[in-house]
Image (tube, rainbow, N blue to C red; front, top):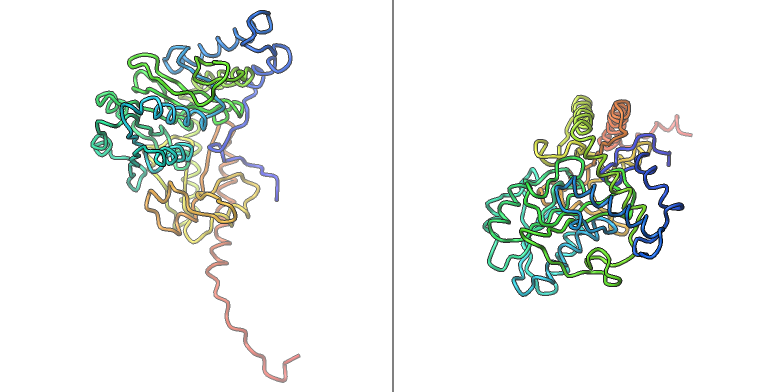
Length: 401
């Protein structure tokens, strides 16, 4: 395998921004105190840094600082939000609404709850990956306690109308959780204007460190109650016990404030790069299919099926470019993505899907090189597949060897 020279897998993870790294660095060795240690200056300095980080994050989301709960990442945040609400409000209802294209950390916990007495409605999507808001509204019953719908899809980049969903939830007196992992930095996330009660974010998707994330929990209008999943010392308002990851929290706060400061100029640049990639692919490669709406989509994502080409073979031959399959690996088998299945894609299109993730450090040269390599490699793979080998022709006896 070659060492990749182009990275186009920014939906999977991102490199830590140098400014984030510099902000974190002192808290590994110099300011190493535990914020729960309240009787000496080491603990005071750590607590002060965490307090400042919480405040800066809250200002981005238009929330209160004590509504920001630090977690290990979006998987934990999603689990805490959904399971926490389900257990706390079980006496009020047993019905949860989500969508067929949600991240597995949402679908898995919903499946777990369905095996423990809860009723789950999985909203379908149309061919573009969009939900029907009327169907969402009609699905709400007197026993509905939670709607969990992601702001932006991690595979196809399609966005849900978060503000409209929030309005429906408020009108029906239902709690609204959104997984904003892929949306952070790519759209404005004002929890008040959008009517969000619970929101999940992960640091490593926004040029921050791995192993840190947050859950916004509305503290008023209404105040959301959550049954904690992790018990112990009572940190994070008893929502999430455990010693705080101070360097991670500092890095997360810096990454979020950078995203806010660079938006929307950064997204404008990234969208131009994405459009350059799409134009180059359309001009040099035929018989493609774009998966998901191009209109309702975050700017840094493309998901394309190259018909007649197995995506796994394509990525193996293009190992100098970091890309993702549009399918998921399960043990030794490869199965089509549940997201593409929900779009009712043909099986061939599902196995030929490739996800392109563009980010802060992508250049025009990266895009042009990728288009060139795609064109060459796909032509080679299609030619190989379409080549019909003629039966071996026997030579006359006198020419036999």
